[in-house]
Image 1 (spheres, helix red, strand yellow):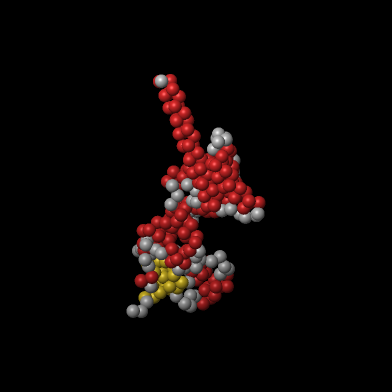
Image 2 (tube, rainbow, N blue to C red):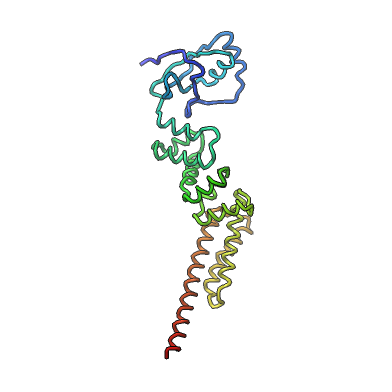
Length: 278
């Protein structure tokens, strides 16, 4: 089936969300050529869902040059099968101007879920790495409370900071956002790392405040902290995930210690009550 050639109003043309290459290159020479000789080769378009409006698949520079040359219409070849309106709508949502980092992450997750697009295909369509798509997906899956806090007070946090926050559990994430809000830490990767290191040290102090007879639990904490500090002193850049794992380990030790102390106190109380009864 031959493609249909028509004249399309320049005002009715949009860059294809996936396939058109919008550039900032100079089109001065092309504009002069169009002024003197017209459009020598039609652009390639597909319907965009609106009557008489089209996405430009190939020839966006010619469209820009035609506008500068003052042309009202431009010859175009129509490729009717090049459009997948649902997919294009999802891609366009990701690429819309002024989109915030968290909004973009949620739009990417929506494209993967509702558009049933594979991560590698979406990465290719957006011109980004597959790992970046995966990281955005993880950002969008953060706890609802954390995302609401970000949308309310921290909407302009960078992608890298959101990526770090996505590696934290709900409580640590909320705590980190509060520190950012108060100006206690910078909303950067280094700021998040520093906050986690301080939290680990604080956990150590809490455990060390326990009775001396709980030496085994304190030794466990010292071992975890020593591992962290040795890694840092050797120049290793601990990741957010590694520090979060350290904090989770410390929390488990602290919880176990608290339960043991509570049981000891309870046993002591019951023993004292028994003596009084006698």
